[in-house]
Image (cartoon, rainbow, N blue to C red; front, side):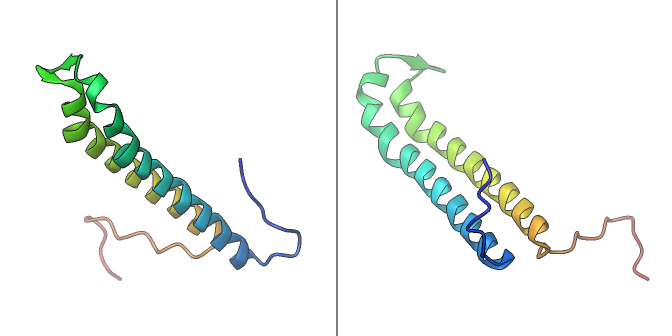
Length: 100
């Protein structure tokens, strides 16, 4: 779903509105993995994963993996928003390219 903003919004205002929305979704996802998943650690400890109680594993490894995945998702979405708005950073030179 794409939010295009109000009819009279400038492209810059529309970009900032979409950026703020993206940031809020990302923060909400981080909050779920940081605050909600540990609430279920007790019941999850009845199950085992790789020899560890699942609640412990989710707290020690699963949340970190989820944080990393959310961060990568945010960066890619933000780069796309920047490209669409025409304010993206230039691509870096490849190692084989010569400066001219």
